[in-house]
Length: 559
Image (cartoon, rainbow, N blue to C red; front, side):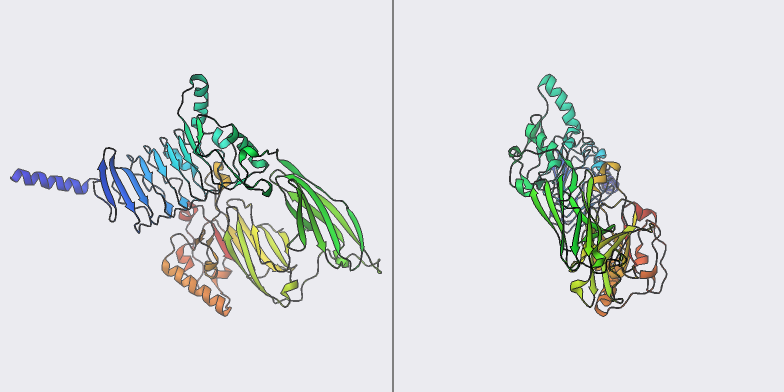
């Protein structure tokens, strides 16, 4: 009998000290079947991947929980794992090493999450992956080499996302497709590859030409789950199937003008016309004396699928309005411009040429409140609110450029507009953007300095996501859910304090003095939570260098 108790005691000790011992997580269930051990967690309050998951599971299924990210090494100790289902959570971020250690993984399902991009380089750690389910997410970009590190993949579901334009090279570069294509011609017998791409908002212009032709000609070994892919735009092709449309090759913009020299009397209304032919449709801007004119009496009319008529109306001509106006058109291929000269007949023809832009407004003390209102895949959206004597006639100037560049781009914004999107930002770059009354120099409190994060790799430059880490308490509530407020490790007490300060500033108009406004941002590191929680009179503290750098984050600072 003593021998029995000794054996039982040893077995119990072994059970407790052995990593991956067959225990189960609280609120979850564990089962054993012919495939091995399985973990099932359904509708729990789980907000992150637990660190104490036993290591002997073959299948893990965590669904309808509250997971928001796949962190680095989340399953690195589970080398036996073959099936990983994380459907219907709230996952928005995926670390490049989130799949580290999963060398035997064959099935990954991430259906019904909130992914806007996928870290495709992460699949270097899953060479045996055969099934990848990403349907019902928010993916809007698929890089050409996305499938390069998935040599065994035979099932890919990208349906019900936000894909609008992709290249056929995505699938031509699919390793298994290249292998199967050769084997098909020689033997006529290969594994099929199932592909789901339906219910995406496909933009059927020239950029999709190669992909549409690829889908039309698709045949085994590729099998489409739904071969009736439909266009969402442009309007002329909306709700048409791929097999019903013909797309042309993309074309560089060509801008022209019916009249390039106009003479009108003082006080008359002037209409400048510019015709642009391009595929895909161009972005058109009017410039006057190298300053961009936006938001004021500029209209665009589509003559046909590839021709746009843009008109700029100048009401009640003044002498200051005469000069050279330029219509500039661009698309992803290139740009083109045409210039129109405006002359004015006046009784005082000998008067010297006035400044090309109006003089400073008399409203010298106008208050402008600027904030970052939204993050996009390619940049940020600014919003501002101004208190002026005559808002219906108040113009603004956006001053934008790299922080260390003395020459900033100036963009004129017409009355009634209080937002502007800054796009096509470069990674790891420090920018400064200011909003002022037209032609006024920037003043304290009218500028934001921010730094863009670094891309994961060159292969994923087209899907970079620029996160803004706000380090000024007064701006915390201006940041939407897609961004990092404070820092990713900021304490709740810090956030609460920031919110209180922000409310106090907004309600009473108090100007936050001290370190929050007067500090400078001279490095690419985000602030620590200690820096966020400092008192107004304290000096800025040193920022952590390594931890935030690794997260590819960015920072914004209010001047």
